Length: 406
Image (cartoon, rainbow, N blue to C red; front, side):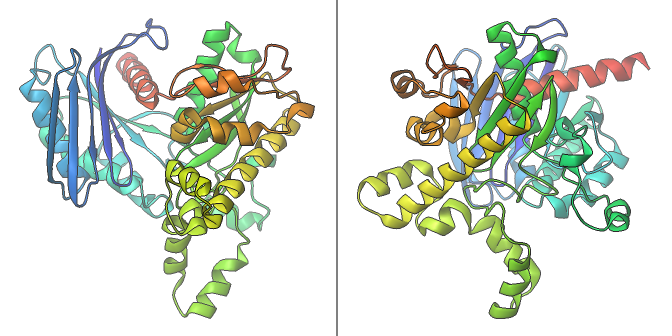
C-alpha cells in the first residue's frame, strides 16, 4: 500500500510517500519520495526529493499549510504518483485528539469538525493540520481515503494516578480535563525500534523515552504502555522547550495579567512562543547556537542550556523511580539525536541510577542509531532517530484495513 504521510508543524509541512504492507518489518519500508515546506507564512523554502535522489528546490511565498499541501500534491502528480498505481491513501498527523479520538480514525466531515473544536488546546499544530486536511479533501474529492493519526492516542490508557489532575472532580469530568500527553508517535517509535534492535519482547520492556527538539517530552513505558508522560492537558506542560516554558506555577499567569495589564491569551502566548531556551537566553531557541554562544562566554546562553539539561535529568530520574527501574533510556528528536554535549550533560552523575555513558560512543553518535552507554551499564542508553512518518503510515494502513473488514 502506498501512503502519503503529511506532518504539519507550526511553520512547516513534512511529507513522505511510504510503501508497506501489514507484514513489512519496522524500518524496512520503501520511501518513494519525501520533502519539506519550511517557513510557511512568509517566503518559504520547498525541498522535495524522489526515491532515486532527484531534487526539486524552490523559494516561494507560501501563505499557509493549505497552500503548502497543494504544492506537494502538484509535485507528486508530476511524478505520476497521483492516479492509478500511485498513492492509495493519505495519513495526517494531528497533535491533539482530546477525549474523543483514542485511535487512528478515517476522516469525514464529523471528524474534521471535532478536530476543529480542539484547536484551542493545541493552537500551533491542530490548525495547520486542518488546513492541510481540507486542501487534500478538495484536491482528492473523496477519491482516496484519509486517516487522522493522533499524537495523544499512545497515552490514552495511562493510569489515573498519572492522567488525572488534583482539581475538583466535577470540573474535570464536565470539561474532559486530564493529562493527555503528546509526542505519542515519537515515543512509540523509540520503544518499538528499541525492542526490535535488542530482540526484546515488547510486552516486557520498561523504558524512559526522551524526545528533545523544539518541543520536548519524556515518557515512562512499561510493557508497551505509556504509564506517565511529561506533557499534559496541552503541549505546554512539562520540560523546558525551544520557546515553551514547560512547568510553571499556575498562579504566574494571573500574576502577570495583573502586573502587565494584558489578558490571559497574551500571557499564554508568552509561555508558548517567547519562553524556554529563547526566553532564558534572549538569543535563540536553537541548541546549536546556544552551545556556541556558551563557549564564547554568553552567561544567559549557558544558563538556558544548564536549565534545559537539569530539567531533563530530573524527569528521567523521576520516571526511573516510577518504573522501579528500566532497561534503557532512549534519546530521540532533533536535540536528542544530534547533540552529544547535551546528552552527556543530562547523563552526568547518573551512575548511581545504573546509567553510565560511554563518551567515545556518545561523541560519534550524531543522527544515527546506536548504544551510547558502557557495556556494563545496568540501564542502557540509546540514541534512536525518530521516524513519525512510518508510524503514521502503519497506523493509517491498519485503520483502513479494519474499516474495510467491518
